[in-house]
Length: 348
Ligand code: KG4
Ligand code: ZN
Image (cartoon, rainbow, N blue to C red):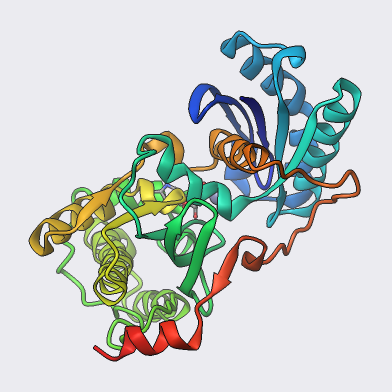
C-alpha cells in the first residue's frame, strides 16, 4: 500500500510518501520568517502554508517516483494545531483525494508523533511507554500495540517545548528555544544552579513546567547580569531541570506499568542531553530505549502517512465532511486508563 501524508499543523509544511511502513520520501519546509518575531505568528503561518504546499507535495511525490495514479490514499493532519495552517492542509488533501478518487484519512498530529517511533523500529517490543514532548504537548502513553494507546498522564500547564521556548526568550536567545538553549548549554555546567524538578516528588505521571519558567524569571530579576555573565551555566541548568523531569517520569512509568521499552517522540526528543540522559539511566535500570532519528522527532509528514496507512489497512477512512479541529483532543486515539489499571499501578 502507498500513502501520501501531508502535515501543516503549525509552521512546517511537510509531505511524505510511505509504502508498507517504509519511507519513500519526506520533505519538510520550515518557515523561518517567524524567528524575528520570537514565536509563530498564526496569520503569517497560514499564508506561508498556502505558498509552500504545492511545491512540497510535488517534491515528495517526485522523490518517491510516484504520481497520484499509483497511491492508495492521502492522509492529512486535521488537529490539534493552528486553525488557519491546518485548514490549508485539510482542504488541499481533501480536494486531491476527491479529484483523484483516492481514500482520505484525517490524522491526529499527536498520533503521528506516536507512530514516528515505529518508523525505524517496526518491531518495537510492546507494551511500550512513549513520551511525546513537543511545543504544545507533553504526554505519557502506554502502547499495547499500534492503535491501542492508554493515557498515563500529561502536563497540567506548559508543555516541555514551551518551557524551552519561554526560557529561551527570558534568556534573550532566539526562537525556537529548544535548539538555542541546547547550543548555549553545551559550554555550561548543569549543576551551577538548582532549578526545581517540577512534580518529580509526586509519583504520578503528570508534568508541570510553568513554575520552572517562573523560577528562571524570578532568578533573572534578582540577578539581571547573570543572563550575560553566566548564560551557558543558566541554559545548562535550566535544560537539565526539564530533561531530568521528563526522563525520570518516563522511567517511573516503565517501572509501574511493567512495559518492556521506552521511546520518545516530538520536537523535544531531538534534545541531545535528553537522549544522553535517557540512554544512560535506561542502561542503569536495564530498560530498552528507542530514540527516533532527529528528522522523525520534529514535525514531519512521514509519521502522518504511517498513521494513514495503518488505518487504511484496517479499511478505515475519513468522511468528506472532516474539517480542521484546532483543539482535537487526545481521546480521538487514546483511551483513559481504567480504575483497575490505576489500582494495579499504584499498589507498588
Ligand atoms: O514536535 P514539534 O516539532 O512541533 C510541535 O508539535 O509542537 O516540537 C517543537 C518544539 C519546540 O518547542 C522546540 O523548541 C522544541 O520542540 N525543540 C527542542 C529541540 N528541537 C526542537 N527542544 C529541545 N531541544 C531540541 N534540540
Ligand atoms: Zn509536532
